[in-house]
Every structure is written in C-alpha cells, then in structure tokens.
Image (cartoon, rainbow, N blue to C red; front, side):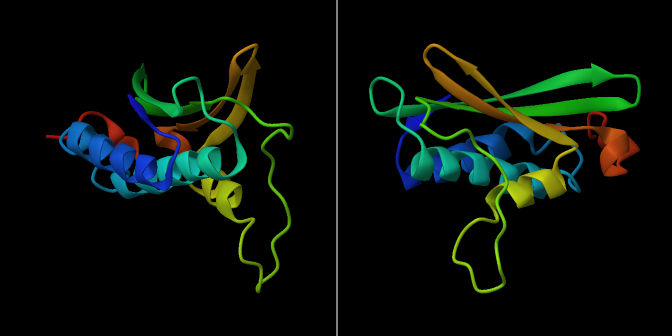
Length: 138
C-alpha cells in the first residue's frame, strides 16, 4: 500500500494491517506487528525523504515456514543521507528508541538500498518469538 509521507500515513498503515491480518496471524503477534509497522513508517516520515508523489510504500508478506508462518514488514521511502541504525537513548531522551523497539519485537531487521531509495524491513519468526502457533489462526 502507499501512504502519505506524513504522520497520518502510520495510522493508515496500522489500520490496514489490522484489517487484513486479524484473522490470519496469532492474536499474540498482531500487536507486535502493529507497533513495529508504526515505528518503521514513523521513522520514514521523520528521517527520510518521500518517494515521488510525497508517499511511503508499506508492504507485508506471509511466508510459509516449517514452524508456521513468518511475517515480513517492509517500509520503502526516498532515503536519507544517514543509514537507519540504533542509537543510544538515555532515560530522558525524547527520541532514539524506535529501532530498539523494532529489534526487540522482530526476529531480525535490516535496510536495503537501491537507486530510488531505501527499504527498512523487519521479519517475525515463529520460533524466535516463541509463538509456534503463529500459523494461520482459526
């Protein structure tokens, strides 16, 4: 999906993710997916340029796995001069915790760059999360 390069884009992405995955993934996992997606979109809006048209691209994918289903989230923006990285955040710091949240909730995350911008992705693995019931709910 494509959302505005604006704070409202994170809300739109969260709502769509919940609408599409509520009956698909474990209810234990859904809040973590929502939190990570919000962080990734928020970081794209705060720290990166928009894609052409003033937007950010948001995607998720369910990947079959012998242990259930892995979920991949990906947020693509126009890039910035600095590569996304975790930075120290003291107890009184206003920011700097977003990628720590992502790293704490997702099994792994990373950044892919190409000539058009960058994608920050996070992957949720049933074993890494301790949710072997992550397979399709219901």
